[in-house]
Image 1 (cartoon, rainbow, N blue to C red):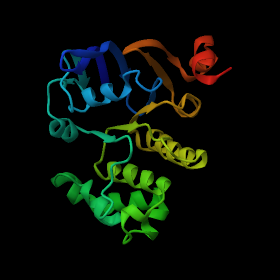
Image 2: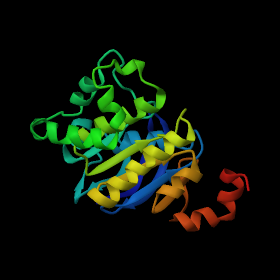
Image 3: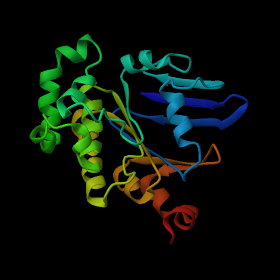
Length: 235
């Protein structure tokens, strides 16, 4: 589904990513792992058209999206849940979810998709008329994920979903991601600093260090890797 090859990107004259290669199959959960400043956010921005790569390809369903706009990439089915959630705090929960229906197709399917979102996150239905800014941090993250699902993604990018949340809330979010992949065949790119939780959810993973892919393998292989244990798991 997604195949990234030789991806380079940065800001102005400063390059951050160097020859990034990875791929995701349909219905697969792949984790992009690394510490703060490793290049994860830059990679997400390059994949979603927020910055233009200086080299490489981002092939999605056979089409190279590396030079395309964010809107075009969204239309093709790559939907992001951004780091920090970025919900509209003064709008209601329902109004935020309506923002996820960005084109004719998603607007026509909105009521059906809204029902599914409420089934996944019942608390959002209970608070549908409540201002989003009054929700807890965990509920706001649920809202951000639900809003993305209203956009009917083929590939869902979760950017640091554990940031600032209690472990049990993170588990709930990742369980929804797992269900989407297993039951709905939605591919998930999980970008995370919390390697333990990410590897517990993902099928495979890639470790980014200093803008390069340093390691890759199945979740079991990365969990057992001595470098990962020492550098990220504190073992």
